[in-house]
Image (cartoon, rainbow over all chains, first blue to last red; front, side, top):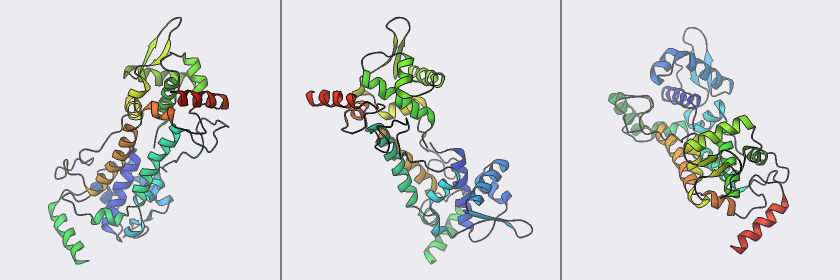
Length: 154
Length: 154
């Protein structure tokens, strides 16, 4: 139900959040997220257009999170690349229905609403701070230790 | 987040549930669901392959629901055409993660789980029986009255 684009955008943004406020090159993001470079560039362009990341060319440039990880939610990222389209009027265009959804479309919209709410409630900072044996996008146990000491100090 | 195929499959199946156990022609389903005929045929083929509908050629033939509307859930229909793919192992293939999802993928999977649960809990019979001013796929107030008297008598 989540497209590759959504998955890749979230990987890229979670990685940048873990490095914030530093900028990272596309090559670095590619290595961390395992997303193929051409696809990754397109995803990052989309995120830049919607103000989720900023890009700067040249030496010391790269891609960085546009806001702090506390101020960006999973929903912000998802909606930047592939907005969750709630069902607000009858998709069949039945004039008698209009904005009064039938039970089928009401249930479909309720499912979308629950995903939207769960994603709106979670900031990137929360994703990174959650205690877990698996560090987002990272296979190095050392990073876990470093991260845990960073979290416990903050 | 729901594809056209999912939307169209649900429309077709909800219509057939409202007509069950009768079979309906592709033309009749097309008129009720407003789905373009070639696309509709493909969707119906997919549903037939997965045992959601049965098709019979010739006079008196057509497409019918394979089970009673009480025994088919929204999830059965969605999974027949475009299965909800839960995230069971790390999508990055990180060996250190394996089946221990990181907080990002745990949250994405939780969202999928909530949709799956909502759809598993709803049979087609429930969609049709729900009191609503908008009858699924139907713009005819007369149909509403007929249906309401049918529901109140049963």
